[in-house]
Length: 392
Image 1 (spheres, rainbow, N blue to C red):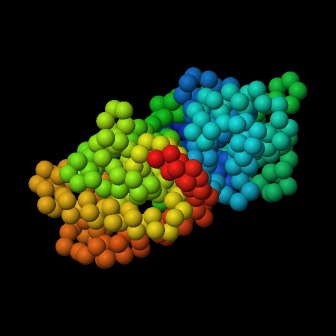
Image 2 (spheres, rainbow, N blue to C red; image 1 turned 60 degrees about the vertical axis):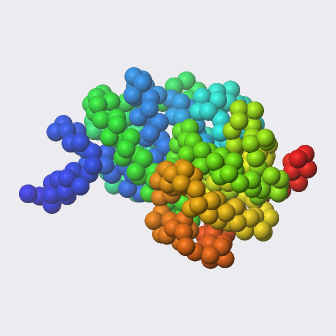
Image 3 (cartoon, rainbow, N blue to C red; image 1 turned 30 degrees about the vertical axis):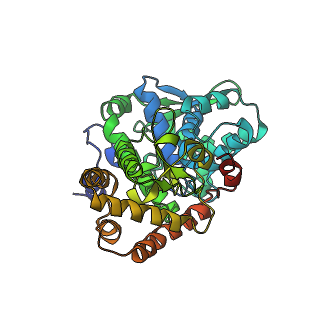
């Protein structure tokens, strides 16, 4: 066996992608090998989305709009960094500066804005984004080329026309508009193996984001907008605790009791460190509060130095109540089974038998550095709390 054939077979066997005799799957498996920027991941995902919908001739504009919409939430809401001078992130920031769209905007709203926008900065950012991505993604298919050749798009397109293995080919429309036309040989493969390919892209994206955001927890949960969160176990436990023994809201100092639950008779649960940073509903990060406080705080980080100690005192008191009351203990056990995933934290905080002083020390050592990391990433401190707490 020739060395080139050996390398080809080895790549095919090491790839998680299904093999097909008449297609060079080993080349497809190599499209994400060199990822200095995020554009390859989002460009290919956009192609897969559109091909799955049955469209095989796709304009660059359609792909760009899908890319921005796909990355919007993770960049705007979770503050994930796509990389220094990342062309896609630059475009997203331009859209943020001119659109007025919320970080939680739906994909279709982002796309609708991009279709209608005439902003010159956005146009320039789009042009920069597609300067390389349509060509660089297919580097494994195009073979070895010098940097000078990579900058010569006419050379690349001519070389592409002579290659029947590419994923797609390049076409010029009227004016400056450009599009790709999918290679018929690949369409069936992409459609048939859509779920596997999506899993592959997601895995590559998680690895890429983890390298770019080494101090950010929960990356796998931040590549898509969250599904509806289920805090029923938390609400049941804290409602029972408060009915058993009134306690204070840590942000206002006001009593939490049945009389000041919301109009539906519910308590509100706040994520002390924003959910959009942690991407989890861990027991130690949840605290009962008032609806207005929860809305005002949103995804901001508490700014008061003693907030963590107040949170610790509240949790320690709730733990003592659960240990004294069998019914509340059942609710607590159900709550921790669902919302406490770290066995070491369960031992250090919620196993019982430790003093309030040790409990507080453990809470502070856990939460304080996470708060600081969130602030370093760009999460704002909750500065206007006084305006809200004054209404109580």
